[in-house]
Image (cartoon, rainbow, N blue to C red; front, top):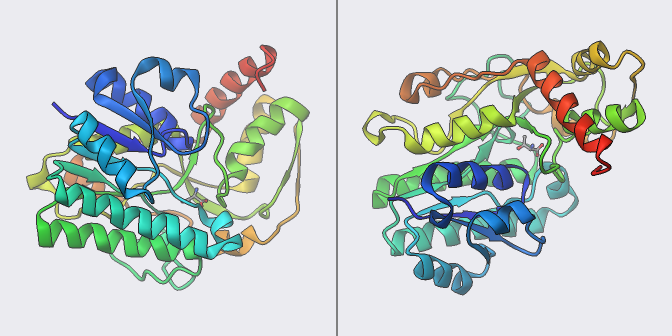
Length: 320
Ligand code: AKB
């Protein structure tokens, strides 16, 4: 039986992943690790919650010992846009936090570590369409640099110490539970909230900006499927490309307009445009499909219908 610690449980992916894992492994077997953010009632009522900061090794070790943790998922990270405002913070949280997690995992003989990566590992010299699994990794953001180093570190611990480290290159993740913070792909979430609340949105990347994206149910499925994949079938470990959909900001707006015809979008690109321009349009995820059977369920329209319905309900109830 797995005893899982999710560091970054209050974040966009962590909050939903923790609950999904509790459904599978039981509430008591999945410990929500939160930093300063006040955990939601859903997190505190469905299983244990601890204050865990990957930069504080003593607190990390005491949580690992207290619950006999044998699997750590490190979802805590400074994302691309915030990372450009504060590169040293991004380095500290993303690199020192990660090496602490890997060392604690090695010293305590963990069965598995999950370390998320991102499409931010790619850069302006990477092929943009159907970006291959093995390709040029020369990112131009501090976030991307830490993600490339993170993938290499994960593979290093796997090879040198036999630690089962796994990771996915997440595209932009779209969800309606916890809003993302500090990422370049955040516009693809904000547009739905603004469409419901104000029927208009000012987008910080231009209309033609095309990026790989994924709806949260697919993100949870990809993460859990990779965690449960047969180790002997894996040729890759910390760096799987995972694709689901690819659309431009203009196509996203058109999809919203289908359901809210009066919705209006304007474009005012800011410094995040350059980050978006350095990332691929779409990725080739055939390694993930072959090695652990990855297959997404949602396309843009199915996601838009779902997002607008759930956010619309929240709005009616006065929750947003
Ligand atoms: C970001 O925009 O920084 C993240 C990512 C693609 O990793 N959402």
